[in-house]
Length: 490
Image (cartoon, rainbow, N blue to C red):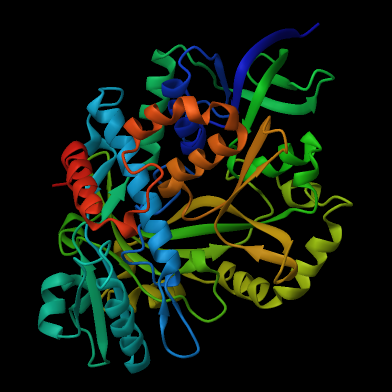
């Protein structure tokens, strides 16, 4: 007979999302009992792991796909503003944790690295000029610089400028960018949670989830090491298992989870660890995605700081695997197809033939072909200096929207039941960078009856809570100064 345990909150998955929600709830409701289940042996081993993502603190300082060029040539910066504000929210909460000594040594997970956008060719140079003009007039981006002067660009990105031909080029730069080790941050947060009496169970797989007659949720959990079966019930369940969230959402049977599918995309990076090369480049430099490429495949050359060691990442190169997790099953995709999402999945297949073709081509790329792509950024790159790294799996949401049946979504989305007793996070980038804003959404959706009482604490954790930064330049300056001080980014 399996052991049965009751708790207030269950978090599934020990990644950055569960770590963030658990840390916020512990501040808001310290008396609540929280249990975490993670199938791996440690926290942050899937998408949150530092080797499975680019570590960009996504704040729209360099990502060209967040600023859409409209038919009339104007640049829509609304998404860039939204993503930047969400990252400012994350930095405020991290600063609160540091200032209250709930986590320590912020330089172990976040360091200052300039963010840059880089384009080639007359048409893209004109686009970047228009983008710079639109963004630099906004108080969130007013520190941004622009240059198409090769001498200035040689100062900014010497590794990328050496041996470059005379094609028109331009770049923007902003010094306040960051490189974030989300794996280290996740582990710090779980260390804090364990010290706060949160029961974190590694090597535990959630096999089944179902609703009880009383309205709670019952989970059938298996201890992977011993094989022992356990049953746990909770009033609230958060499914934050990365790509694995979709199957558990489907098992829950909530109507809000019907008609949703997932499309897995894997990623690979070229990595250079040679000090003499790494020393020539310190920035995260984003270019434009090739035609037909998904937004997550925007090419970028990144300075990474992992365990106090600098390296360079270039990519990502997209790939395809039917797994929903890096350590998942080859049957993940096929078993996610249900009667309620079959037509949606079929429609997505028909609508995304070009994407499928692109992914097949990416999978077939040789190292020589990947080096050709790298030489668009680093003209004199040598194959022997760069190694291939397999990054994490991302599962893009497929759903029916106003844009049509079987629309492939890019970004993150919270799916929750009408009564707020269960919520699941689906999707990918900008993901981790916006974790605090996304978990605020979960809190508002699932605990509306507590929001009024929690408001003072929410305001303490996130000083801009409830306010728009865009409409308050003085508050922007105050928050940027205080978070830079707390996180050691000055």
